[in-house]
Structures are given as structure tokens and as C-alpha cells.
Length: 427
Image 1 (spheres, rainbow, N blue to C red):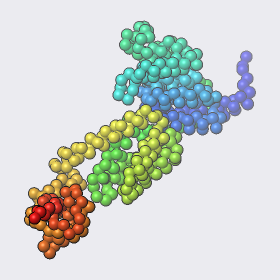
Image 2: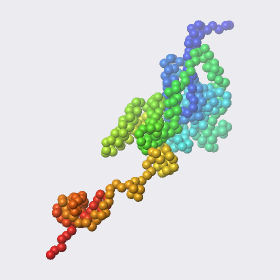
Image 3: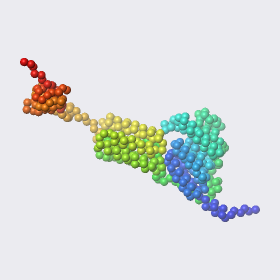
Image 4: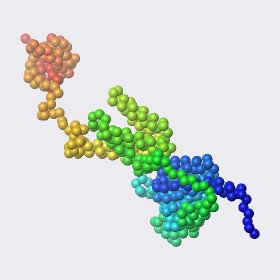
């Protein structure tokens, strides 16, 4: 008996829209901003499902956590399509999707949490990440033991190569066997057919140029580099007259930092305004003595970096790296390069204004030592004496000397001429 499919159902199937969104390269806050835009667009257009094409080695834990919340908070059907690798934070992201499909030869797992130095994170961070991995697996109805083995070396699963110092990394076949994959497909087209959306409209959302730049700039490795270039450019500019290439490079690097964080949605314009105010106060300090304005400006600049950052710890480390690099290069410029390189000899003062080289700031009148004169004014302890026909500014040895007293010059050091009162002998 032939089946009958109403025209309304067929039309509804053809009217469905499926979004395909890439999850590639390092996981960071810029990726979250892009995925957030893609999910919002899919929800606005009432899409039937979103396919996230995952191919990432992992990345920042905080960014992965926000992406995981993004996946679980949407009412749309979410599918993680592991096209080659979903490691570390990529595995966590995939576990937060409603379904997981993998291509032949793909891998998923190896999700230990490490710090910026590549070492194992502290126990508190490890405990949080292990709980997050376990929760992600449980929420999607999967056995959490395998998620734990991905993040903890002590979980022993010898049949899958985990335990005894090794983290679990599932192959395509193993993921299907333990229920961490709903199926294996050759490519995206086959996945769409498997999901039953062969007649749906497929809309692929790619990153804009601005989002690509933002992702690059907000990368935890790139941030300290940008800040180091910025600080170096400004330090070199201090040694050179006018405003040239080093200063332009420094300002450009810092503006790129803020631009990337603004586009990624990590910072608002208040951070950029605070930075501009801080720079203005530092410039004002050059003309207004006191130091308070400069200190406030410096604090404002540092605060603007933390305000723009999505992670206070990472920003603190990045600023310390930039400060260390700036100090190190400053020392090298003055002590080493200033003597060897022609360019640095032009911007760094290496000559000393010594008396041996013919530089004299004040003439030392040693010929006056031993001469006698009379005080024209009282010495308190500075004043004026008359030596012959010449009036000379002098100081006493510390005592008060009245006017019209006989004195003798006992010392001459530059502009400082010291006199001593002469006591008249009694008859």
C-alpha cells in the first residue's frame, strides 16, 4: 500500500533552514563572540538546527565554559560535527551539543587543564574543569566516566588507552562504541542527509574580517606580544626627539588591543575612554610638576587594560611580561646597543659633560682663596662682601656675620664661595 505524504508536510520540510557554523582554531573569547552572533541569527530566523563543524586543538577554559552555556541555553537543535579533531576545550564544547557526529579518523578528548606556561593547573582549577566535563556528559545523557578520563590521568580505562599517566582520546570507532557519538559520516552533505534535512535550506555563517582580526588579537599568546610592542614603542620614543616610527608602532599596537576586544564583545567604549584619559594625564604630567597627575594617569591606563580583558589573571600576566620586556630592552639599548649601533647612538646620549672634556658649568675662582674683605650685607649665612673693588656673593661657614665685618675667603667651589669672620686681636 502506497504511503501518502500531505503537501503541507513536504512544503514545511523544504522551508526548513539549517545553519552551519565552523568552530576552528584556538578556543578563545573571540570565538565565543562569533558563535554568539551565529546562534542569535539562527534563533532570529527560526532555524531548525545548527551544525557546529568542530576542528580545534582546544584553548581557554573560560571561553569554552561560555560557549558551553551558549549551546545548552538555546532551544535550537545543536549538532557537533567533529571534522578531524575536538581536543581539550573542543571536547567540552562538543559534549554540550545535543548530538555528536564524527568523520572517519577523527579524535575527541585529551582535555587536561594547563596554565599559560604549559604546566598542570592548580588543584582548584582542575577540580572545576573535571566537574564541568562530568556535568557536560551527564546533561547530554552520556556516561561521565569517559569525560572524566579525558580530563584526569588517574581514571583507568586500559581498553581505551587511558590511565597510568595517559588521558583518554577517543577515536571515531571508540566514540561510537561508548555512546559519545551518534554516528559516523563521510562529510557534511552525508550528515545533513542523516539528520533528515536534505530538502532544507543550508545557510553557512562564516567569520567576518573584523571577527577574524578580533580572534587573532584576543588570543592569549598574542595579547602579551601586542602589549610588549606597545610598551617598547613608547619607551624607544622617549629616547628619541619628536614623534616617529617607534611611537606610532606603540600607539598602533595598543589601539589594536582595544579594537580586538571591542569587536569580540569583551570590552566597551568605557575602557577605551579610560585609556585615552590616562594617556592625556601622562602627557599633562610633562607640563605640570608634582607627580600626582602622572600617577593617576598610569593607574587609569592599567585599569583600562583590566577593564577590556575578559580574564584578569591572563591580563595581569600579560602586563608583567610587557613590563619585563620593556625594562630589559631599555637596559640593552642604553648599555649595549647605544655603544655599538649607529641608530641607537643617534637617539641615546652617550657623551658625558665632564670638566676633562672641556665642559664647565661654573667657573671656580680659586684665586680668591686667602683674600680678605668686608661684609657689605649681613651674612645669614649668605650675603655679599667687598673684595677690593669687586662685590662677591658668598656664604659663611654657617654662623651669622654682621655687616661691616672683616672676613677671609677660605674655600671656592664653583659658584659657592665660603668666608670666615676675622677676629681682631686685642690691644
